[in-house]
Length: 115
Length: 115
Image 1 (cartoon, rainbow over the protein chains, first blue to last red):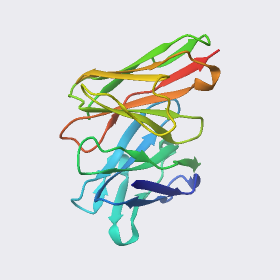
Image 2: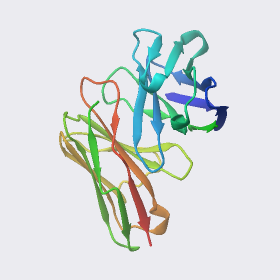
Image 3: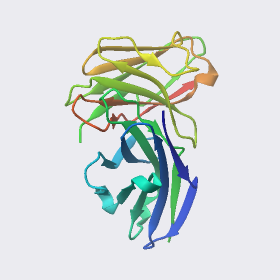
Image 4: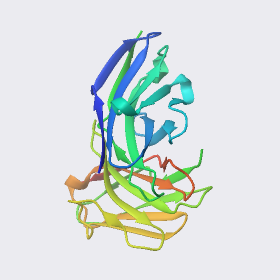
């Protein structure tokens, strides 16, 4: 079974500050891990993914995440927040055994940016 | 990234009627499609997973006779909400995954309101 836990349902940072969104996973098989962003009333857009290659993954819009197996974590970071980063962020996990593996989402973290 | 088109983006229907939501992969073959339901300010709840040409696999607690899923081709899956009731009002999102891709691509979602 697989699951993800996102710590903090709401994170607020000042514009220009570091963004850190936390995600811990549980998986009985080697995982694929993802971060998605959702803007109001829209679908999800993939920010980045980990697929067992490099542990430090760079994504779009300046975001990156580091896979730490020892900590079962995949935290999302961005050095300098921008107002346009305000959105809902979801961490997700799936197994890499087949393309039919389910993608399971965390509860989400709402990121607010203060001017 | 690949494009998944979901239609309609919003629909209002009367209680007791049925509503069909379409999910199309526009530029790749979607061997697996996922249907999610999202309540306001909550995460995505996986409803079912469908593989082309076979019956969908429903998650526990999801009524398969109420939420009919068809995945007849490699580019189209449909979700039909039968005999809709106000409690079925929600945001429904589909995603599609190809055979060689690790991530799933998401449609823009459908806001269903049952009155």
